[in-house]
Image 1: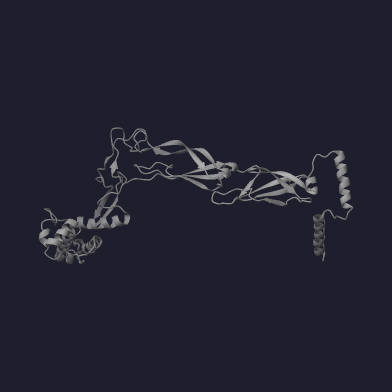
Image 2: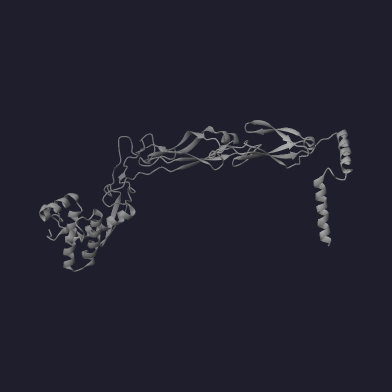
Length: 378
């Protein structure tokens, strides 16, 4: 073993961290590697010295012995062993560490190949009353669940997954050409590190089967179209024992026969007969809480909007409820009798005899049309 100070060999301070030692080793090993310094015996000797220094200082137990006793504490514990060392293996370790840091492959250990299940989306159609007041709804969701026969392992009863013979259970295989060494996912086990030689007959080794599950969804009051309810862990089952995904229930509110919704507000049309619109009165208006009386002033025109405060929707993410906007639609009488038509004609004649005073909008409209054509002629 080299008698030079090992910290001096790696060009680091005696209080250097493990990361600093590893970084220095990579840099110096690449610089002095024999494949990059052909026929340079001095570079090969330096490379051996660097490797031995790293083997001691990267091991906490050996480093502590070296710090206390110097070379005497580690003589015989480092080096290439009976067969010496292989520069290609060392350089492969360097690249394995580099690619492991970048891609998470980890040349010396296999990450647990556990896969989370996929999230699912379910569209739930609700009536307006259900969306506004809240409800508990049962839904049927087709999804992948853990196989009951093999308990999600994928292996037949009485057997289990075995270590992959191609990668030795590491999930990664190494390909080397010259001094380049690159790791890639094992083509046989797909990175799992294990293979199933006797697959479960129920799930064909997948560990999951398709099943339709009935779930109860609690819909909070005030939801609207586009809102999503998250059911944690109710998505697809994970693979290789991984956790299940989530189920997202997206709300769609069906069109309503009476109300239209705009956020927290509701709107509806209120039919009013001709006499009530002229003379005034009241009409019963439906709301989500029952009927209320709406006062109609005399002379109300079709299209006028009345607002009933607080008769809208209390949103799921809000405090005060919205309003109900009632749009008056004056109904034209139909299926009149001969007598009713005669009375209506007499009434119309009496209105026209009064210089249009009772129809201000009509007179304004006629004046506007006349002005328009006068402008065209000029």
